Length: 303
Image 1 (cartoon, rainbow, N blue to C red):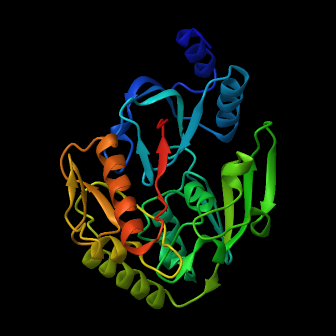
Image 2 (tube, helix red, strand yellow):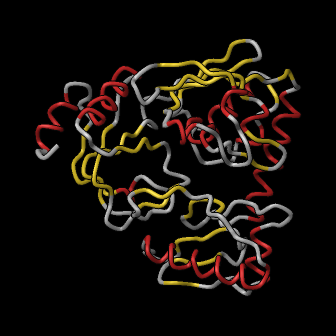
């Protein structure tokens, strides 16, 4: 659509929360990124469905953003519509041993409600700073668990505007992957199945994981979490450290000395700084160990 005003007016029929030229650095854990041409917060599933339909019918690029914890945004921003589901689409319902939550619900909040209901199996997700939708899309995991271990079913919005329920087995969940991006599904909500467990055991496990994170991860700097996927038979952080990159800096981006699997923003890093650093790390690790590191971070607006 040539006329941005017309597009905004169409979107305003379905939500009043619309921002123009919104800095995406405010909405990502990396604190990096240029402006979104339009930044929209749907108020309901129906609102989300209508906004996506508007984008598709008008050939406007869009990206559904959760908590912005696993993304790197281009310095040039995003020439389209960013649809933010984190604020409104975050309901959580506990029923017996199952929890049904909307895609924008934070994993930490779901884990807390599981703890309060004495439901075990989701402790691993308590420290992952993302939303359920993003976690399902990439089959997020940590320590002793991953989403596929507890996921029962998912409700998605398809590219042709249909709402569809899928069983976890239909999603082809693997290590940091699923069929959701390939099918261009948008996760709307999901149900996880947990097991009854003493609340004290759940609390103790969550405290242990939190302590290990504080000890080993550079949580005091902006980042997008683990920068690279774990290569088969190796640990990305160790390969990077052994290649001499601990503390290596490009502009404001740095390989964390505390955990070399993290690229951190130590001072007004740009997207280009991070991409340059990632490329240098990949080349050196390949040269030294013939292991190809694959980024875990999702790129937005990067051509």
